Image (cartoon, rainbow, N blue to C red; front, side, top):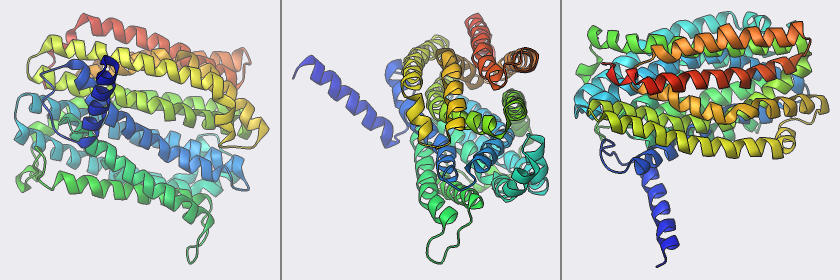
Length: 471
């Protein structure tokens, strides 16, 4: 067998192992293999998460009033980013603590921490969902939608916000499994949820047999149902006692020291993503008010495509979070740092490829979601301008996940606050309003700010203070 054949077979074997879902000790052995074994299912998981929005966008983009429908889907996703931020913050804390306990060879404590995270997240989600159901129309109006669009989209927002517990658990439980080093279950839960969404979307939107056509509202019903089925799959594995995380009844007893530890990690983590999310909400509102319904629809279409490609990169960078947490737990400090740098290398290559795709295939990608020439023109411009910073996005994601995996959630929070609120938002406003660039001012501000954030994150990472954090 030739060397190239051996290498090819070795790569295929590694891919197959990554999809099997076996639990491994990532504090030993090849760092390259560890990154690949974790990254492949994590990337596929994030691809599936991004497919949710793209499936909805595809089907509603072919409704009669597509401009209004696309705007509702996009603006609702922007509002939901607040809930996503809390879910990601809690899952980040769960990943950090679970990974640290697994690195310390204490799976009992890891399972206990995971359950405590679920309790806290459940309480917060119920409160947020209630507010979203009551103030659905008002949320769309605040985001810049017209009264007619807000009225049409009210039911869509109510269903999406009302299904917040599924969103929260889907993120959180996947974070628990990732911390334990089992990224395959997280991936499969998103596969199942998306398969259900893809099947149900045309049924609920257009109607089939005894099922009436719900139009735009049908997209929300399909997504909520798909996510709920994915959560049921997660719970089956979490409580099935087939993995090293074995949940017991005693784990459900409130443990305030553990809760305080989780909240202390999650709170800045939540702020970290709320800061970024609020920035995106402001940018969406700025585009809607300066570019109208067409500008907003074009921007939202571009963002869905951007997120479709960025989320796999985020999944790859999640490998750094697990590797950092487990290796710090095992006191393998240099291995933790080397794992991050190896992940940076792979994410840079991936994002270079995505940049080429956006420049070469921007038009065909946008055409898949809308036939409106005006919307297409705005979306293509947004994609090409925003993608200019993709390589820096890829590096920055790994830096953020390295800090978060170590439990140092304050550092990226400070970086995000300065980068988004003190730099990106003022820059976008200045370009859009003062220099009258219109929506293009927002498009330009995005890669400029993300590049600055990445540079700051890399400098702080090299200082190494994250290695000393205790969780």
